[in-house]
Amino acid sequence: MYKKGQAALEFLTTYGWAFLVILVMIGALAYFGVLNPSRFVPETCTLGAAFLCDDAVIDTGRVTIKMRNNLEAINITNVTITDIDSGSIGANDTEIQLAAGGIIILTVAKPSGATWTVGLKKKVSADIEYFIVSSTRTFTKSTGGDIVGTIQ
Image (tube, rainbow, N blue to C red; front, side, top):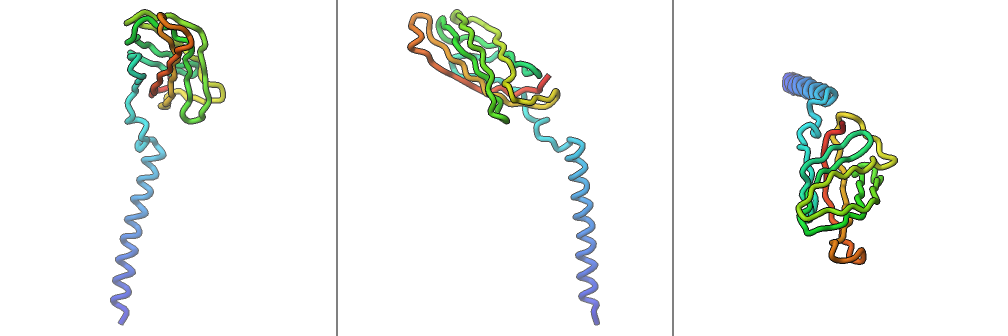
């Protein structure tokens, strides 16, 4: 008399157990880091057209950028690093002259208030203020880009 109800209940129970097993498996994979999407994000360094980023390193205390000048001779007046996650800012205010096509390695201290853990991926924003040597500081320009790297 209740055969249809029993079949429906067994059907739902079987699928319920299968669904529960799938959820436990996904949870275990996420717990052990297999499903961590940051593992698949490539390390990149992109700056504006004025500069070519040859390399960048993020470690627990600073960000180091190796970049090439694509303009004529310039004076770099300020380099600012912003932690995308916390919004905190670190800056390097020293004035540096860079010849056309010249390569420079800039180091900026980690933004205060940012917590960086070794082995995790981090994205920071870099802003560079500069002016062309043949002009004056009045004509300061700004360009920027993003750096993604594994914290060392």
